[in-house]
Length: 148
Ligand SMILES: [Zn+2]
Image 1 (cartoon, protein in one colour):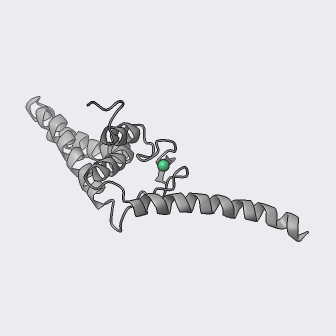
Image 2 (cartoon, helix red, strand yellow; image 1 turned 180 degrees about the vertical axis):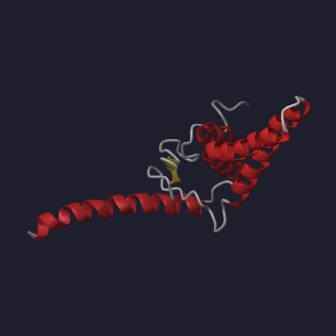
Image 3 (cartoon, protein in one colour; image 1 turned 120 degrees about the vertical axis):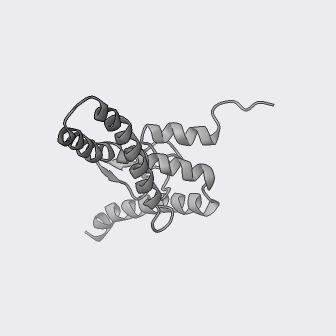
């Protein structure tokens, strides 16, 4: 028996590749360069526990290190002056993690969700948060009308 459509694990990776919520795929993970606390559509809280992004930082560091070494090490055999080679390495070591940190954080979220799927509590608390906030906004909008 074959399942139709992509599996949930594949969906996580497809959605975070577009920097969208891995759970619902509707909202963006980032507002500019800042990661949202939770999904505005489904309410899933992205930072699943304290210190959650430490592994994303480690992953970013490892990928940057590998990328820079792969690009800069061959330059040592080209006869380029050492200072120029070091300068290129330092420049890339600053540029690569800056450009990649959003995708690395999203990738870490998908990897973690693959390893530890969202609990019912996480899904339900997000759902309640979204519906509670929308009710609260409606109440705040209606409150001035009723008081005046
Ligand atoms: Zn969502």
